[in-house]
Image 1 (spheres, rainbow, N blue to C red):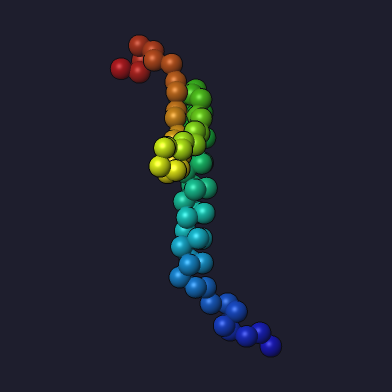
Image 2: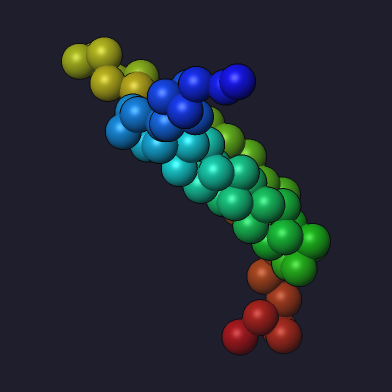
Length: 68
């Protein structure tokens, strides 16, 4: 017999699940942009003088006449 309380997710667990899922979706979107635009996707982690950490995503692609 399984205890039902084991199956319940806490609010923190749900938030972690959503964050993880959103990160996977974002990664898939950036990879799709790379393919669609023949681009290069890079990720940068930054740290400012106050100790605040951020992540930057950059998608670079060549500008052509067709881009306009």
